[in-house]
Amino acid sequence: MKIPISVLVVIYKSNRDVLLIERADRDGFWQSVTGSLDAPDEDLAEAAAREVFEETGIAVDQLPQGALRNLHHHIEYEIYPAWRFRYAPGVTRNTEHWFSLKVPDGVQVQLAPREHVAYQWLPYQEAAKQCFSPSNGEAILKLFSAQ
Image: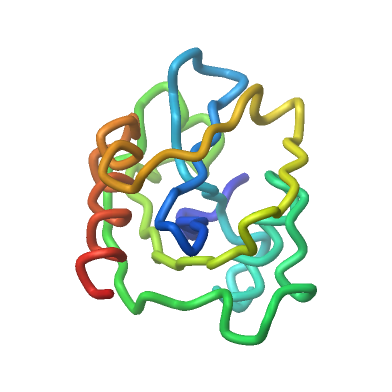
């Protein structure tokens, strides 16, 4: 069963282009890296780094220190009914913690084929509009409004 605590990581380059990945299980569902904690006591930053590596092949520990930043913001949202079977009975809400990750311009992306089928780099405003989840778009805009 999935833990209803997750991370969202907005990956971006110095020119403010943002990485979006398309889910394999839902055509046209573009998003940033997301994922649930593996254990209730898993460190949020470790979960973020793990999810980035699992979904994109980008190793956070190979990037400059400080590339991964906790944005110290979280939201709570209702889990889509179609995905509730992944959680314990009665769990309907998830708490998502936001992170950002600045990557080198030439970074290579290696998608996990069972999870994602495509990726694209977009200017941040366009990326925010392309996200299926309104809160994902909000996270992107919040990141760049603070810079």
